[in-house]
Length: 99
Image (cartoon, rainbow, N blue to C red; front, side, top):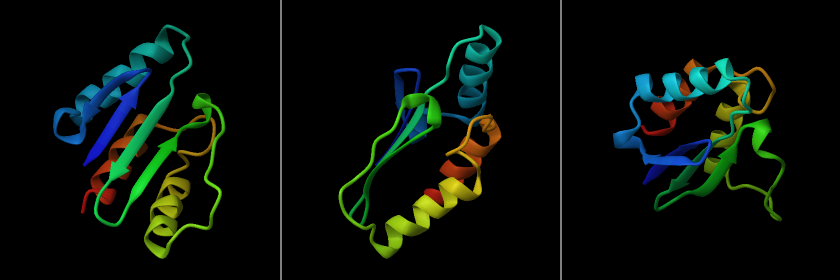
């Protein structure tokens, strides 16, 4: 199961359309609000929570598994760990991680 949360509004991946994701992020940015996006992934091989920089810091206490490292690398490749990330990159991440 994958969930995306934007400024506390949490939806399952099935209910989080690309248009909804983009609109939620852009609307908050237009209002000069910080936008915290978190993605929670719970599958048979993953149990992860990834957050954009506006959410604050966190982290686990162990080294990631190979599959977790792939997910972290995708998050980093799409610049979701840096200020100025794009809504389309959140959508791209969700599409690729849901395969």
